[in-house]
Length: 500
Ligand code: AHR
Image 1 (cartoon, rainbow, N blue to C red):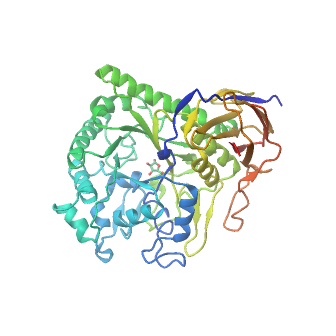
Image 2 (cartoon, rainbow, N blue to C red):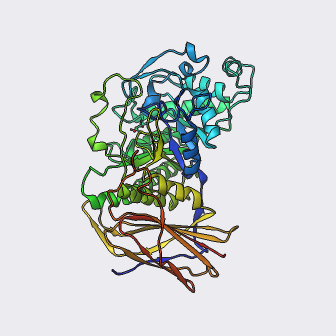
Image 3 (cartoon, rainbow, N blue to C red):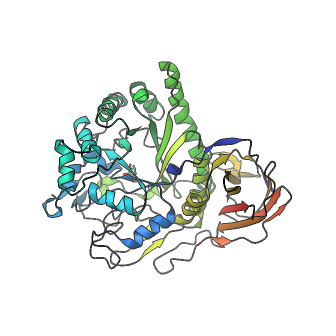
């Protein structure tokens, strides 16, 4: 097969590797919280009910940020129900997923857990059934030192020091007809602006995310962002994007090329934000928070109305294969290649619900295939993202026409002198890669690992949790300033070059 070519030059940088790109998401949905991260009485649980086996896996995965508590769940959530003595907390009906919410796990437990996994918390406020007042109360509880109604309550609950939570989402998917308390763009734009202003009075150090469209297929995509930002551009730090790429939604080649859609989505949202800035005479270059993204067979989901009242049900526990790992790898590559403007990204979700980590109640926890590209990228994307010049054979797709068979990103760590190439072969045949590393001489050591399998449908299950793991790829070599490798079919690859 004709080789794919990659040119890298340290003079051409996209931006620094933003650690917040390796975020995740824990929603009160299905078994994400209950029997996912929290299961009192589990053999691996500590005295607070946190599953230590899951804590270990989250740390291994390298998650840097965790968004919480939703998702759709947040739009009907009373955060006050989830704090204080556990035996006094009320059970509530969660209207988003028709679940019985026990409130056994709430903000204080989440903050304990996020410290254990060493991830930054990203909190969403309810702008569906509640508003500005309750958002400020929650922020006061979390961040105000002491001496006010809500901060004193936190202290009474045994949390003397403020949590100092910086990242806040102003609602969730407020354009979605499924959202409890959904809004028009005008309504939401005004509410987001006023809530942002008030929250900054409570704590000026907060970083605020306004809701963009729920996905790029929404009929109001881009016009939603334009209207919302006309109201709140100057009051927020980020606009959100959400996208799920569906293995069951069309032809396989388009699914494997999902990153093309993510790339166009990012470009459209940023162009819209810049258009609004120009219109308002603002020099602000808003950043994007891609705070929900993943592979999800969404078209197979019967919708919220198909669900019956249950507590911590098995909901959307997608099993991922090797092809999904390649797609997830290519989405991470796309996020890296937008490091100049995408400042936060959260894979949705973390445990059990469309998740890289699966658990069984009372049983084991294991890594799904998609765990591996995330963990490898979080571990090895360091320093700055280099602009990659890719020339690759075409890969025909129904939705996007001909796309390159190779997706690639590269990072260079000036301190360590280490270059890392992340590459996905979308095709069904091995792909020779020829990289020109001009301006990057002197590498002595090459290590190439891939997530690949003779069967792209291979999965990890409770019975075979290690069926798919990263493995070394032989034959990758340096010839002067050229790197050659053979990328296995449908694979995610990490090639690390060090000076020895
Ligand atoms: O992650 C699952 C759901 O997908 C979230 O609750 C919602 O924000 C999105 O539609």
